[in-house]
Amino acid sequence: MGKRLTLYIVIAMFAGIATGYALNVSFPAGDKQLADIADLLKLLPEVFLHLIKMIIAPLIMATLVTGIASMGDSAALGRIGGRALAWFITASLISISLGLVLVNLFQPGVGLNITATAPVSDLATADFTIRHFVLEVFPTSALDAMAKNNVLQILVFSVFAGIGLSALGEEGAPLVRGAEALATLMLTITDYVMRFAPFAVFGALSSVIATRGVGIIITYGVFVEEFYFALLLLWVILLGLGGIFLGKRVIMLARYIREPLLLAFSTASSESALPKLFEQLDRFGVPRRISGFVLPLGYSFNLDGSMIYTSFATLFIAQAYNIQLSAGQQIAMLLTLMVTSKGIAGVPRASLVVIAATLTQFGLPVEGVALLLGVDTFLDMGRTATNVVGNAVATTVITKWEGMLQLPMDPDAPEAVPPHDTPEHGRRGLHLDPEA
Image 1 (tube, one colour):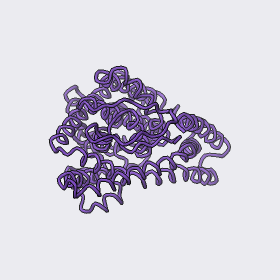
Image 2 (image 1 turned 45 degrees about the vertical axis):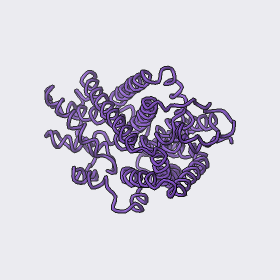
Image 3 (image 1 turned 180 degrees about the horizontal axis):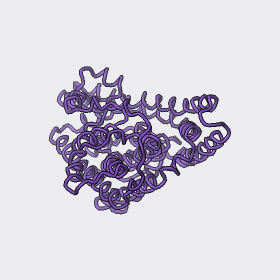
Image 4 (image 1 turned 90 degrees about the horizontal axis):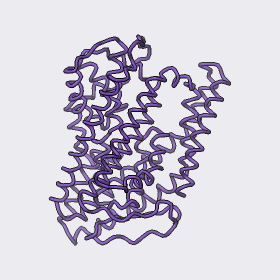
């Protein structure tokens, strides 16, 4: 289904834009019938995301527990975690710094003098505190963490469970095999759910265009274009850094992740891409013992697209209000964003929350967030896809760093799934070929 799914998603994207435009010009602005049709179309991506969220928690827990238990070495776990965090911090600094440099170069907000009109009171800035973040990391119940799809809490529980099973040895082997079977089951379900992806993409885009129109992109055209140029440049940097470790295989990596990338972009949801990203990294040669640990960690701490957006958008708002910030203030803002952005996991509309909190701290008009609300959906598509690229590169680089990167499978090959790897070669485990 590999190439066909990609083709169907691309077709669905164009069909969604065309359908949304046709609906938008066929009804007057604010028409109730148009709103009802858009609401029905929105059901398609909502159902798809519900199905994806159904998979996320058991998949992450199963892959983490299996991967950590198979390591049998807590020192290796600490080393991989340390290398992952070092990469995440470096990538975050690059992303935020690039956003600050480019927004100062392009100055998209200069001369706009736009008055905020949309309310921002629904942003959960009250929850954005260090205390809230620390308490959110540690679960009071593993079942509650899974029910809420709280990736950080699932990660913490799974680390303890994996280390515990590793210490139990043969006594814990049945549970490890159960976790392997659960991960296989979740990937099988993923294959079924992915067949609905083109319909979700169609519904998401047609609903947004129908209600907002393509004019919203033109209204903020300069800002949107320059931000997407910044994202493209960040992609080049991230893949270039990956190429230092992976060589020519970094080009192959881009080919392998095209489906999760399209899903993330068209649905503006990183969650929609996670199961497929696991599968494609399996096939690229990343053992599940590495991806099962690094990817969930990256989904909480390595949001490169969100990082560049927070710095780009914050300075855009300052420019729109004709507020001049010195180089020292901008560096202080960069460091603030580096720290505060690490607490966005589990906070609704996370990037906007970080921006609002940073504006408040630096005495900038927090109502300026309203300037972003109109095009936030379109910007979110780009930054979500960038998060997927960043995490794919980080996971493969850390795997190469550990000397565990294996030979790839052809992502479009219809051949049967290879047998499970032996522990000494690392568990790539749980391969599923959609054509098999």
